[in-house]
Image (tube, rainbow, N blue to C red; front, side, top):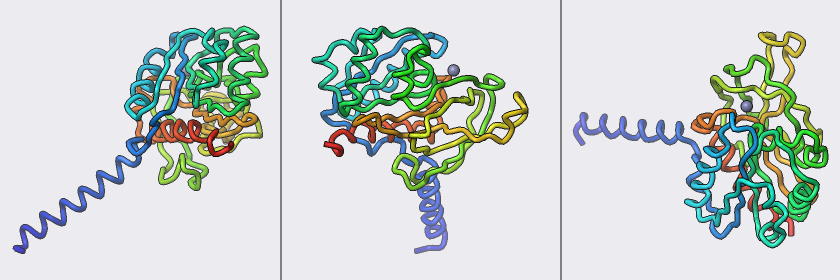
Length: 254
Ligand SMILES: [Zn+2]
C-alpha cells in the first residue's frame, strides 16, 4: 500500500472510533417489541409536556412498542387498559389527582408495571398526594438560580443505565433540589455551589435513580425542564435505557 493510502486508512479508522466514542449508546440498540406503553401528559404547560410526550411516543413506537397516549388522568381508572401495560411514562407537573385515579396508578405499579418520568413530570406532580410521592421516591422543592449551567456526576458506572457514560455539563436548565427517599438506587448526582443559596454549598443531590415500589420498577431523571435537554446524548441515553429497564423488570420479577 502506498504511504498516502495507508495514512488515509489510518485517519479513517481513528475518525470512525472517535465518532463511535462520541455518539455512545443513543438508544438505537433497545428493542421494545410487543411492549404496551402508556404515555400520559398534562399539568403545567410551561414544561411543554405535549412535546415530551410526542418525542418519547414516536421513539417507543419506532422500537416496536404499542403506545397509547392520553392527556387525561382518568385513564388511570381504566383497569382493563392499565393491567395490560408494561410501562407508564408520565409528564404531568403539579395539578391534582383524584383518589380513584391515584389508586389506579399506584396499584398498577405495585403489581409490576414500570413507571418512568423526568423533572416535574413525575418528580413534582400532585403535591398534596404523599402516597404518590412515596412511589416516585422524591419530590422537587426548589431549583436555586432558575435556569443555570451545572455538572452531572455519574455515580454508579456499574449499572446498565449509566455504563460507559462520563460526567457531563448541562446548560441553561434547572438543577433540581429534591427531598429524596433513602430507598432509591442513585445512578447520577449533582453538587450545588454557593452562587444562589450559599447554605447548600457543597451538597450533593441525586439526579437519576431507580427503585422498586412493591413489584413495580420506577426510574427517574430530574433533568428535563426544556424539551431540548434530551438532545444531550448522555441525558437521552439514560432516559431510554431507563425505559428499557423499567419495561422489562416486571418480567424478571415474576
Ligand atoms: Zn422546570
